[in-house]
Image 1 (cartoon, rainbow, N blue to C red):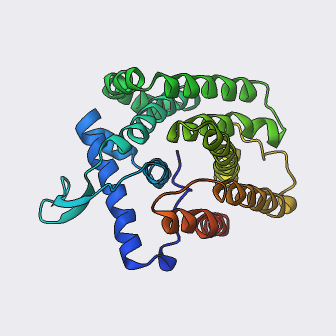
Image 2 (cartoon, helix red, strand yellow; image 1 turned 45 degrees about the horizontal axis):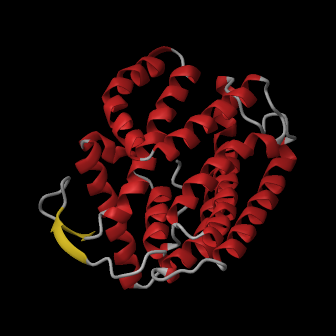
Amino acid sequence: MFGYVRACRPELKIKEYETYKAVYCSLCKNLGKSYGILSRFTLSYDFTFLALLNMSLQNGCDGFHQKRCAFNPLKKCNYCKNDDAIDMPAAAAMIMLYYKILDNIADERGFKRLGYWCLKPIFSSAHKKAAKKYPQIEDAVSEYISAQNALEAVNCDSIDKAADPTAKVMEQILALCSEDETQKRVLNRLGYCLGRYIYLLDAAVDLDQDKKSGSYNVLKNTDDKDIATHIKQQLYFCVNEASKAFELLDIKKYKNILGNIIYLGLEETFIKELNKE
């Protein structure tokens, strides 16, 4: 994933920001413990959101304690004691990374492609471990990559069709956060909207680079004058629909942090990213 689902930090209270950081650090620690030190580089705010959401729908107090940071032993960080809630997001991060490497091997040329070939065996065993633990995530991501590749092979120019595989994989991953069927349906909708948001924003951010490299981008044939307006409308629609779904969830904790991400963070992020371009 791409780090586009993140909090609006200035609007978080200090205690909320500390909790947000603690979940981020807990995910980093879990990745290192479960899949090796290099897996820590897969960490992104998208998976931090997934971990927070997974924790927020469970009863009980997670509890936090301080330990030294693996990358900076002089610094102490807060970590969540409830590792069980972090396991699924960590596995999802690992599986997504492995398929991203395979995708880059297919897309890149020259030294970049060689670099990804070198990374593949390093993360292969970690991927197998994560896939064995969460076969449903493995199946969902595998189907997503196959569907995306098929659309790219025919140079699909429909934004709706191109964004659909990413939306559907997020739909399935978020649904794992609850066993309740009603909540699962809401999580499906939230995941679909966030997946579509991620795909569209990433396409907009990568457009210039993809034009130069000749890589597939569904926005390539869109009139340059219309792209910013059109994409903003699409992204606002995703944010609004995600907000509606979020309001239907039975959030037991961390509601203010999650609300900050949904109501403020998504909009702030896409405005910043689009302004860069």
